[in-house]
Length: 115
Image 1: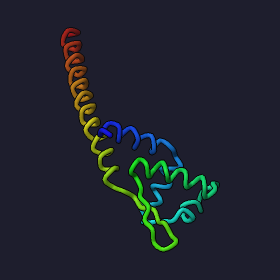
Image 2: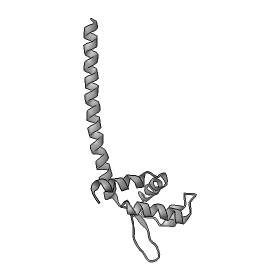
Image 3: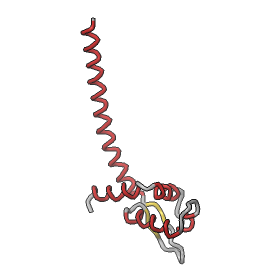
Image 4: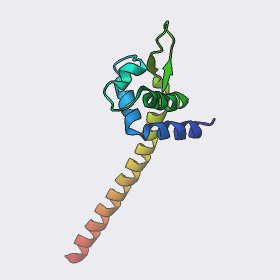
């Protein structure tokens, strides 16, 4: 996959509020499917499906500890998405700044012509 495809998968996974809530929980540390399912009115199977999407997007991984399979965040994928957002934010901020300067200059010209 290319970086753009990775971002598409990442943002698609982040589009769901339940998946974002699961990720928010994992910020505090590893958790099992049962632990992640507790605050939701969802079955363990439904949470497992959300985790599968997050795993495919590279946002979480699962390890095996005996019978337990705790999930944990994979921060690198978040860094790539945050970098993409930051690059585009800077471009748009620069454009807005230039537009603001242009509008200020236009207002200055209008005020001079009124006198």
